Image (cartoon, rainbow, N blue to C red; front, side):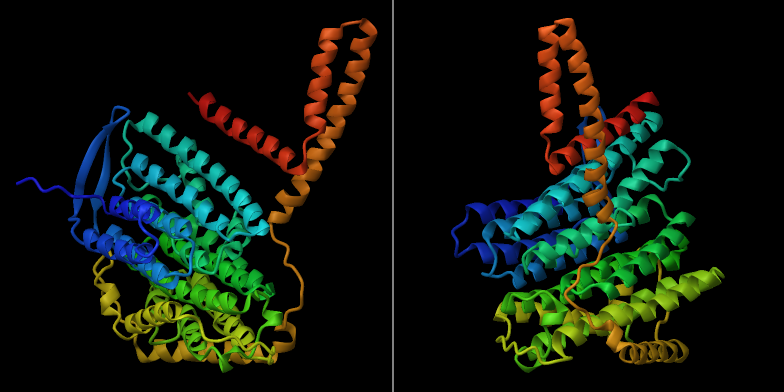
Amino acid sequence: MFEFILPPAILMIAGAVLIGVARPALRPLIALATPLITLYAIWQVPDGVQLTATFLGYEVQFVEGSDLRRLFATVFAIMGFGGALFAFRQSKWWELSAALMYAAGAIGVSFAGDLIVMFLFWELMALFSTVVVWCGGTERARAAGIRYAIIHLVGGIVLKIGIEGLIIHTGSPEIRALTLGNFDTWMIFIGVLINAAAPPISVWLADAYPESSPMGGVFLSAFTTKTAVLALIMLFPGTELLVWLGLIMIFYGIIWALLENDMRRILSYSIVNQVGFMVVGVGIGTELALNGAAAHAFAHIIYKGLLFMSAGAVLYQTGVRKCSNLGGLFRTMPLTTVCGTIGALAISAFPWTSGFISKSMISSGAAYEHMALVWYLLVAASAGVFLHAGIKFPWFVFFQKDSGLRPPEAPWNMRAAMIFFSIICIGLGVFPGLLYSLLPYPVDYKPYTPDHVLSQLQLLLFAGLAFFVMLPMMKRTLTITLDFDYFYRRMIPKIAGFIDRSLASARDRTIEAVLSGGSRAITQVRVQSYRFFSSRSPMGQMAIWMAVLLAVIVLMAFSRG
């Protein structure tokens, strides 16, 4: 008996389109209903390839079910519902529509049965996440969105070159475990890592996410980096390089979050840090570690969404972003304070929260493989996480000094969304079997042993004491934090300007020589060329050099036949 399976991503896309044509009163209800209907469809997808079509001479697989794919698609749908509830009647309709299209791209990647379909939904995510950034509605959001789009354009081209090369050399677009043995797989690897926000090409995240609206930031925190984690699990499990890249991400995120003053930039750097734990799990590559990476991705989407909700509620009610200008909000925003604190405890892997039952699987995976150095670094990093996200964020935003701000509590829909995600954070921590039953491999792991609970509580206790001992150094002032983007936002235009001036000088000499020869036609061409290059703004120069970079990458690909 033939049974037609409707791709869950198509349902999400349909809902996003419907928001644009429906009456204003119905749009919030459609935004809430669409993720729930999609979630139902996700659990109707059985294992194996379910929907195929012919494209460019290849049989492409639009839907393939598995435990791993359903796990990620499920949390993406939950995030879509929670984000829509948080944005209920508070967001522009086009922002809601773009956010659901963004979620549809993530769900489409989750169920993609081959690299071609994965790439199509990958680019759908890049397009509509850029729109979500632009919906911040400020000049800063517009500029950050352009930079975000450029980075993801480069990442998409790199990924596309790798996929095309792999298909040409193997004859198949199948998603399977790859090794870093040739140019094609390296390009795929780099393309995925760009979306995972691996340094040094990670600044797009902390640059763009804080410039979105209070509602848009909630959606942005969930999808792009976690689909990259899913792609790494499917394509590069057990790749040792990922262990060390993940550790770099962990400590990079901790250091920059500790230096930061903007509350949503703190949380953005924290995303890089937490994705680093997942990348380490993928690199270890055992069933326990891969389960840990998948479980931590699920837990992270929820507690990070909760943290962005609490920060978004504060921003929505006060209009203030800087920690140095906040404090004392627990007096008038008690529920937001409680929910934000729950999210902070979860990201710190406090026992009886979702972060504890997921992050510990990754560190245990390292211990079971006798990776002593990796295990010690993961433990040390856990203390660092508690410093920057577990204590610093709630302390400076909700407690510390009295800033004099007395905003009312967030609207009912924002409070409802925060309560919903808080319940999930605690529920999964108290009943870990709910999450473990969804994981791709059988789970024989018990997080709540006396030694494990006691050691984690001791770690958090001493990290907390260290925070308050170093509190004078932790207090932020009205400063900015330089990151790797300094080089492409400042150095590249300077280098381009130097080259432009050198070329202009050469062209001046050429024009003078041509004029002396009396060739007016050639002179006109030279003059127009000179005017074109010398009149470019720094942004235009950057675009020109980005085009040159892309051309070099394409030439490298074609030169390999």
